[in-house]
Amino acid sequence: MGIAGSVTGRTAGSPPTNILLRAIREKKYDDLIGYRSDLPNGRILKSSTLFIKDLSGETVGCICFNQDITDLLGAKLALEGICATEPLQRTCDDTSEYYAADPTRMLENLVDEAIKKAGQVPALMHKGQKLALVRYLEEKGAFLVKGAVRYVASVLGVSSCTVYSYVNEVRAEMQLNGDVVQPD
Image 1 (cartoon, rainbow, N blue to C red):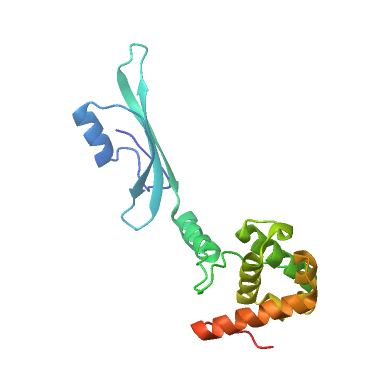
Image 2 (image 1 turned 180 degrees about the vertical axis):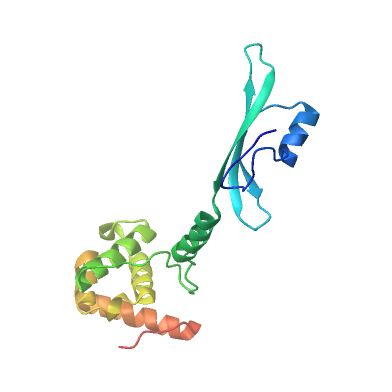
């Protein structure tokens, strides 16, 4: 067999590989596409062996293409490391982080999230649902944003005094339960 190539370092007259020997022994001449090969020097190849057939369908030879992918695999590992993310290890259910252009937009995102979680439009919420919404916002730290009480009051259709009352009620309940309570 006359096989040569710069990737494998083989020359004309080199013996066939173990993969080719097995194909010949088993008379299985199905093309082998994209399999891994390892060189003695540790380099890794992506190989494909194609069997050449004559007009009657008889296998008369083969050709193997080898691509050294060692450096590409190293780059893949580096990129996977750079792109890898880990879930937040938090007691709350944050699954993503918001990057708002201003505090108002951040607050709007948090309130929208709270409304979705409540599953009810604010105008139809009863007091218990509004308290649950305020608790959710408290847990997320929304009331640390300047103007939050006024904004939440406008969304819920209640006065700022009512929202302050809800916040105080939620904080008292959280304190009783041993939950973290935001400072005033």
